[in-house]
Image 1 (cartoon, rainbow, N blue to C red):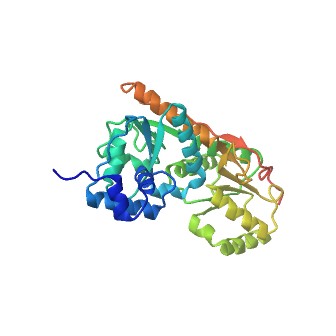
Image 2: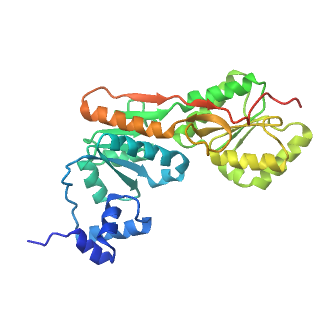
Image 3: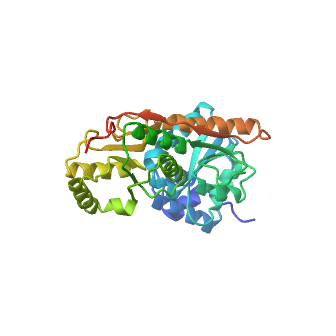
Length: 329
């Protein structure tokens, strides 16, 4: 019978410590991305099979696509909340970053978990591939109308509509939207703005995508001409903090002071974090959001045959005094 491959074997093969190998396989902090890939490659090559923990399946897995890690301002706080909620229930949290290609170790560990939290809609297909029997909660909009999975998401359409309505009530009529509007949350944010403007007989004066905003100097020159002609937008809705930062740079170059000269709003404030970018926005408590996902997951574990639920968290208005009544021009 072939000798069972152990962590010690993987450590010797990779010239790493057993501790580093263990954390890399579990997807925990303390192991770099390069180290983890090196360890997983050795595991596949040596046919390492991870044994179940003596504690049984008292852990949950959070699966997040690598592409979604590009939005750390949102996900890092949510993950904090998930870990806090899991610990309170007496469970460990294993984080798995999903990449292209199959990862047998991730699949095995996820199948043995008490439950799975899917962070971002791109993780759904991975979960369906051999793990659909494990209780799961999706933190994102449902991909299809009849999607059969418990979902938790932000009420982005309602939030953007409320924010846009406040600007309309302040007399703004010339709007610019900044952002690609491609992620599910961004799609609904943009839809809320466009729908409300249309209802009021208006449309966007300009839609600046990320590539447009990256050319800060180009935006500065264009808005300088509009300022001279009296056609400068009075309200700018930013899809993310990144967009808001760039818009604030443009405003600074043109000596525009919010909200006296221009109103700038965003959609990504954290109600707990005083260090968030100081832009008037719609926000939520991201740590609490993560804890709520854990609560819904354990409810699903306890009641596996219950009807699927969709829970929308309504964002709150956060006033950082970068938006106000429309200036007279």
